[in-house]
Length: 78
Image (cartoon, rainbow, N blue to C red; front, side, top):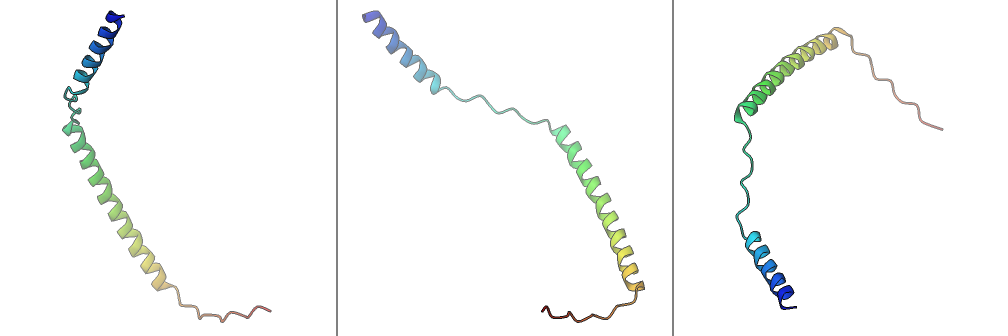
């Protein structure tokens, strides 16, 4: 019985020592891949901004070319 108790106590000391060990450092992300992704994102955003600017101008021209229609008053519901 003494051996069982001694084994349990030794196990508690071992687990306590393991719990206080410093944690493993977090893995560091590769900066080269991150920079490439960031550059790609910037290029995509610039291309989208140009596209939106062009469509906005085209929409404004089309809207200016169409004559304004007068507002029709709504008929009351019965």
